Image (cartoon, rainbow, N blue to C red; front, side, top):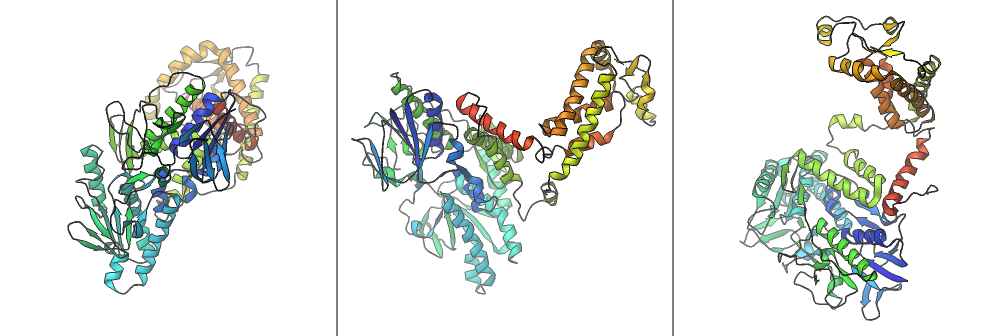
Amino acid sequence: MTEIVVLGAGYAGIRAALTLHKRLKNEDVCIRIIDKHNRHTLLTELHEVAGNRVDEESVKIYLKDIFKYTRVKVIQDTITSIDFENQKLISERGHYTYNYLIIGCGSEPAYFNIDGMQEHAYTLWSLEDAKRIHKHVIDMFQAAADEKDPKKRSAYLTFIIGGGGFTGIEMMGELMQWIRILCKEYAISRKEVRLMVIEAMPQILAILDHRLITKAVSYLTKHGVEILTDSPIKSVASDYLQIKDGTIIDTRTLIWTGGIKGNDFITRLGLPVTNRGRIEVNQFTQSMQYKNMFFIGDNAHFVDEDGRVLPALVESAMQTGDAAALNIVRLIKEQPLESCKPKLHGVMVSIGRSYAVADVMGFKSSGIIAVFIKHMVNIHYQFEVAGFEQVIRYLSHQFLHKREDDHFLKEHFIQRSFTFFLVIMRMYLGYMWLIQGMNKLREGWLSKAVIYAERIGPTLPDAIANPSPPADTANEAVKQGLNLIGKYTPLWYAWILENIIASNALLFQTLIVITEIGLGIAFLTGTFTFIAALISIGMNINFIFSTGLYDYWYLVTSIACLGGAGRSFGVDHYLIPWFMRQWRYFIRNRDIKINLK
């Protein structure tokens, strides 16, 4: 059996393992992914944990959930070395053999030999880092609230981001919002708090379009952030830092986001590395020394066709992971390898919850539009790796997570209640729909034309100008059947009723009967209740437009049933989770398995 090991469960490793499963699910292979954690961490969202926007669970996707219904075996272990000649990965617990190896161990902060940086600065490159920053910021406010010495108090309340790249600006965006809450909680004036970004280059967010940089700078300064550019940090101590021009700033908080390098594990492998600790690979992401080994993500020094080094971005990590996996498949099937041709679609930077800048596929945006794009990208990725359940968790963490600075309306929108109380409404609504359908069935709606369309009242503009009470439905019925056009039917809808509905009366009567009986059964059993509620709302809007049936309680009750009315004492309690699992199984295997757990 061919053994393939993916070392590292970052963005690149996850993509590689999933691609291997997809392409080799019918082959005699063993696929393992090894990581020291039992989770995949969303590194691009760590600033949200550090800045109190979401809790730590929001950036975790457990590997057992990602690789459920796949052939990929998850192993939680720490690899200490690799025996390339005997093709073994070695840990304190034992060893793992391989025929093909993909390495994507990620990166770590680079300190550029700045005196005191590693000892005194806080980094943001792991979940543990984010939790440490979160606790430290709270500690600083607590210390400041009790401190009488103005100089010490000022140092406690000075928060500096070292590095004006994506991570640093996103971290500052979270701090900007959180600081307002902390000031209120600890009775500290916002004017006492100093927020700073210190960047060695001439501008922050250097790879963005200059117009987006200008917007980002404007938004930051508007919210009280000082931005120092052309200001390399020379040294760092526990209570101050010094800039190259000699300026000393008293602070107890420097969050360093100024650069990354390859993981130390990579440098210990004994292979040639670049000055940033990366392994040089060929156009196939293949090791120059060992043809059965591939480096991906931040571990790969990959040069594209234009001679540019691929940047350390999530998208480039995923594309190198995909390329490595596909080339292993080709090696196994004795096919020629294909070059990795990365195609980066753009970048996005969030500056707090309600503002962002983005340059995606040439479309440049800022503000709420860019925020929406960023959420859509996050949802797409999380759906791809962990299905609908993860998307629901993401939306819950982002929009239902309670914060002290929430808009007052949010408290009402996210107020939780027992869906049990919706059961009564759901059952009654189902009973009424079922009775309506059965009555029409007895009246012969399936065998003779009952509905017709004839304009008997004023047009809608006339009705608005000269309103009168809604017509009694019984008065609209004549010997020939039921007139679909009422006094308030819009002209465009009357045309549809005359030329499409009435001319195919038996077809639409049959559809109405089936729909009403179907709605009754769906609500009574609690099956696909959300979809049934949407259809019920649509049916009632149709009635209001046409016959003049003004049973508004149908509409209101249907809206209430959108809130998970079938999850209590209904089939949906079991059916919806099964469908979510079935969808993920289908995505992973392009197959359906009825007895799925």
